Length: 155
Image 1 (cartoon, rainbow, N blue to C red):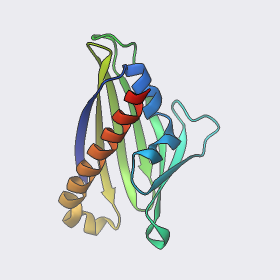
Image 2: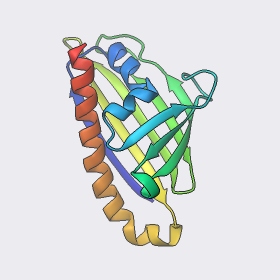
Image 3: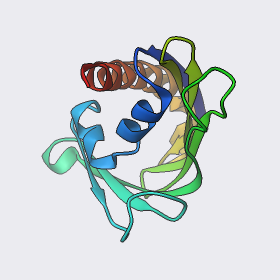
């Protein structure tokens, strides 16, 4: 397993940041070489399903996911309930969970924390590659959160 987390303070409200973050197809703007397709009737809430296709040509793979926890932020003021979404990854290449929280901060700002706890197949190689996957994942998701912040801060 590879576990890592990244965080980013965003100069936008928690509710606006949440709405941007759960617009699944929009992730393609921030995640390099990735396109997301919603597969469920509804894109929001527990049970929503989507697939991220990452890579180029024959080196691309599908990362199917489903939402298992869906709790939008309770407001935009400090002390309001943070938003939380947890996703299960159940593909042939990537398995595990991803989760993010959106916590309201003073001044109509918020903090986004993204956590990944994944295994990459084949699993016997995952033990050897876990630290590398964590390092690459942390760097990749830090860049992803920078892209999210730029997007939502522009309005």
